[in-house]
Length: 66
Length: 161
Image 1 (cartoon, rainbow over the protein chains, first blue to last red):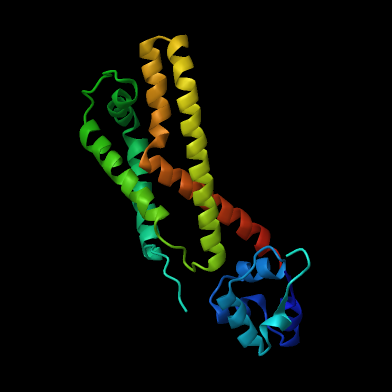
Image 2 (image 1 turned 180 degrees about the vertical axis):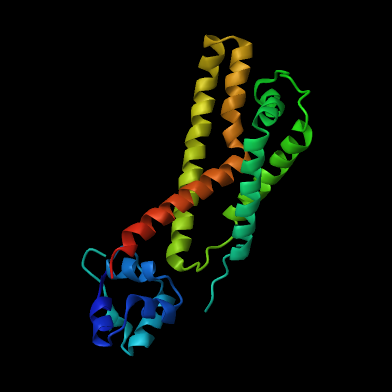
């Protein structure tokens, strides 16, 4: 699954720690998601979309291999 | 929407760690007496048991070690998020697979071992191999795998900003 988390984070000038605090997870979890090592749950993905004020599809998109 | 983890609060992990440290300290201070008290359980042999203080120290270690390991294994991390829950699940699956393989190995090798060595020696080997199958060891191994995986993953992920 591809994600634009880093791009959106840069757009609103937010650190990984800020995003972690706002979504109630650890900073390492944000890093893991950005690197594609961990797929977030629907709830966490929705929380992130809400923080950035975008739709979930803007943040995450399925790849052919998924 | 908040998920229930059915785990104890994080403070219990700290309490468990303190109690476990006390057990380790007791083992270091009364190591000879504790070994003498515990060896008969392993080898069915009576070693010297007239050492002062061996009774209460061994009893405390035997009682508190499983409790402290259980407290550490069954309490959540400071911030128990879904990645940590996944690592917890992976650790649990790994230890269950190891125990199944162990049980199968024991089942398959027991007939051969009993023919190869004397019954007394076989009893000793069998007992040594049975010890790690106890609940305490199961929780201990699970905790070890979980903490190692968490530490390894956090170390890999901490570098990036």
